[in-house]
Image (cartoon, rainbow, N blue to C red; front, side):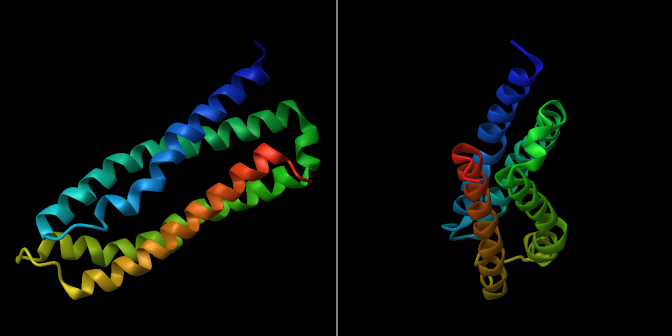
Length: 150
């Protein structure tokens, strides 16, 4: 097995183990009916997010590593577009997701009642839209890498 083949293998595993869990993040909490359930759901999301971070780092390292070995990738439209979309997803974390999560974390820490406040519901809708958008971009990247259309 060549180094390039090893990188491909790690890249595919990272996509499955790292990105796959991201598709269930919203569904873990969208049916919560009490603050206890919501807090538990967000605790699960934090744990799952660690897989996503490790997967994203491995995807970036192996993807760039493959391009360093096979420099023809740097001239392929599908590769360049995939890389741009990947960086857009990475940027969504600090630029979009974190600002949406900050007030939600405050609610999770400070809300005393078991009833989920209306403020959370408004904030979570915005959060879920961004999360679903990043999921769509991940699917686009996967399609580009499988089909290599240009």
